[in-house]
Length: 122
Image (cartoon, rainbow, N blue to C red):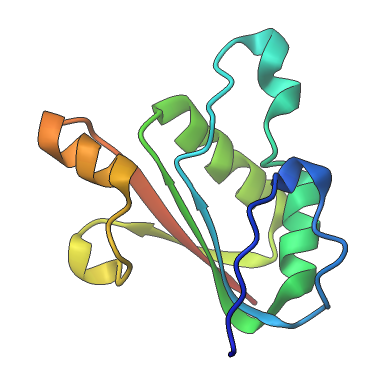
């Protein structure tokens, strides 16, 4: 009764979510849009961070994971520009208290490195 799931593209915005109403936001293994001409299609940008910041409760967290290094760097750069989150680079599984996604399981099985970040709303 206290949870809802919606299959939806964040690229369309999350304006319909009430401010200060969410405990956790998950942005896990997004499409990397690796070509420079496609970078504009990446949903992780300053507008997205503004919306995530707005909907998160004080002290709530944004969880990020990717197996693409340039996307990880992009996440860090955008977070550093935004400045309203405390950034924690996850170094071991004990810091990441979430179920393993299918993508993470695949990465582990075939030995693909992946990075994780927990960004806490200040």
